[in-house]
Image 1: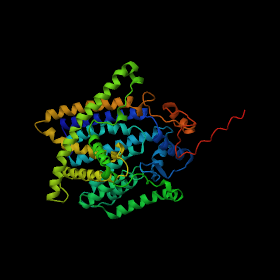
Image 2: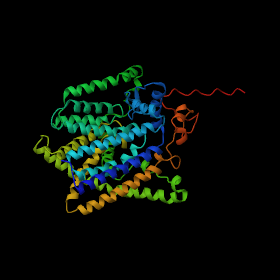
Image 3: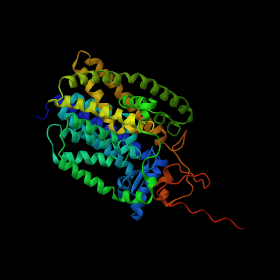
Image 4: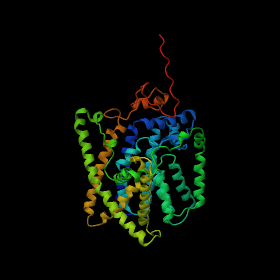
Length: 466
């Protein structure tokens, strides 16, 4: 039955307030977002589709070489530009994808856990500066958050019995994620592990139908590859690099611990508040906030470390004694997180390149759920007062740091120290039609400038013969 009474009303109001707070920060980030090389590469694909009806059948270059397969990237950028000719149109879609991911996972927690878990998830996922920062600008990896959420929701639907449409959606999400980033391999390996351990049951008709849809979407890419084999995403590094050199694997583990913490990458905390508070105040404020962010980030890592210390021994005991799917939704969710994290470690170990921060975005929510499932019982224990104060402090710190990123991080300010900018070889109409020239830093350098791979090369100016 639906919750009722004053406690239920207070819960709803608190959850709504947390959501609206995160949404407000996200919208500010979208409005202030800047463009650099990857953003211009994406916008070039979308502009060609919106302006000339030209569909580029491949995405951005991959870390291993070549380019991501498929037409999905062009569609995700181009279709919003048809509606609104502004470089922030597809970025707004990115934010909406993150909104959808949060709402889907919140509904899952409503069925699998309870109010405390939902409030903690709103704090640790929705108001997580990692999530907000990468929801506010255009990048192919930023769409992966929704892919990961859909993988979890469809797996939940398949935990007890096969279902046609849930199986279709589960396989379709993996196939579409493969057109955005190679970290889709984490979801693929996780699904294999979930099937082997009987945590999900696929309807093979639905799975084959989804595979056929994905294959059909790859036909234009296959035609392009037949004419240019360099588009294939392979050629750099070697499989198993993480096992041989260990550092890539350790780096990946580090990111899984950092996602639900307050420890962020350097580019997120390269603050410059000059345009907001002036140079004099910035000289004090920027280094102070950055040092505080670093210190709090190191301290906050204790929380995910403790959560994992509790998760793995418990899962090991469960697997030793029984392999059947657990009856409670909370227990199933715990096992799902374990399976996905094992798949992530396998993907990190096999990756031919060094693991970077964005390669785990597809399971950012799983890294957060591990902490949510660990921390929720504290709010029912004798330590509940301490837990409430800690959650309140975490909320304040998260909001302050996210707001600082929204106005002071390079991706969300024009100019300043180490701005997000890239020199182009020539001017182009899309810079003006999409508002990039007015709101972003895009200098023109005919000699050393860069050029988006989807656009025809610029015509060199005729030499002056006077």
